[in-house]
Length: 176
Image 1 (tube, rainbow, N blue to C red):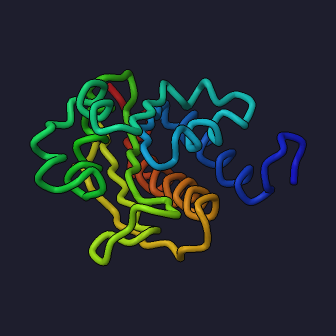
Image 2 (tube, rainbow, N blue to C red):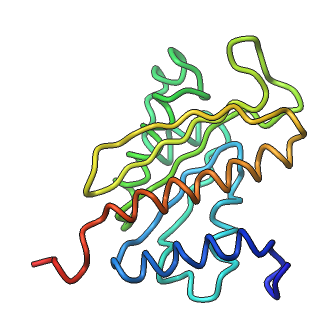
């Protein structure tokens, strides 16, 4: 545990992401459902994070996903809030409604209730949209080891996805 009160591994990964975003002059926005703002909170634990984080959207309800991010209600009805389609739409909506260059969206079932055979507790969809690459989605099914475990695992996965995507950003020195 470091002085900021977060585990060293998390601190190191977020610090590396901050350095990468600073070097590439990339701003991040988050669109969070099941994590309820934990990704943004984790990113802001690091001093200097204002150089990396533009804003965070906490869109826990379906209405918030539609109102704040422009996710079509019909899409949520057709595919469910916990789906790759909705995660991608959340990421694209956050990109369109922020000054960010890259966004990460998270929607899932943290439990302990709400899971089904098709969508079990621990299912989390991530969407990532960037100015320099096509939007993509990633699906994880984390072990059902409690709500806090699933949410923290989702935060770490989001940081990994952001880091990998920012690495692909054009170098700031190459911009015209």
